[in-house]
Length: 181
Image (cartoon, rainbow, N blue to C red; front, side, top):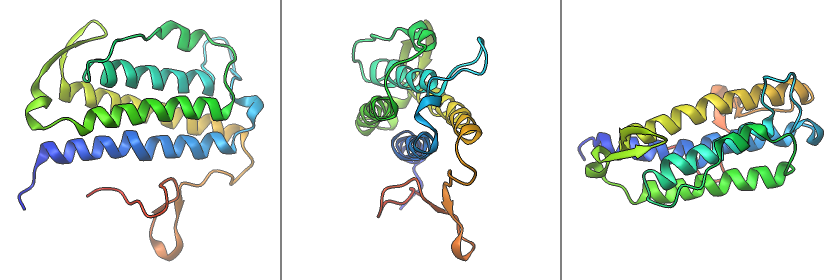
């Protein structure tokens, strides 16, 4: 079978947004003490709760709405203004629903759709660039969430890979699921 760059791009995007990044965030926030979810080290920093709200808002605005055509109901400023809110389960549920909705949009796309023009968040872009933006953006904030969690979780409480036998086996994937080629 011939290599299909568009299909590979869409498969990897579904994997990152549907499995890897939310899985790592779930492990990190589960290890983090509940009372640290909305903690801000200073006035100009965001809490883990803010970052989760922001990721859900971004993925909904750019993929679910911008690419998938659903109404854009995002209130970006509120994501950063929140000083408290849902606990761990509520935050993770909110994020995972947004990611599942985004994956459902990605499931409907083909190579021809990737070049389609879109107007998202005041920007002219195309579907492929919008997806790429969200995956990159999600990666950045996943790293921030992991750092926040590691700063407050007990040492060694956050592990993403089992290195038994010299292989890095993901611990953030559901049983029986592996990453795509």
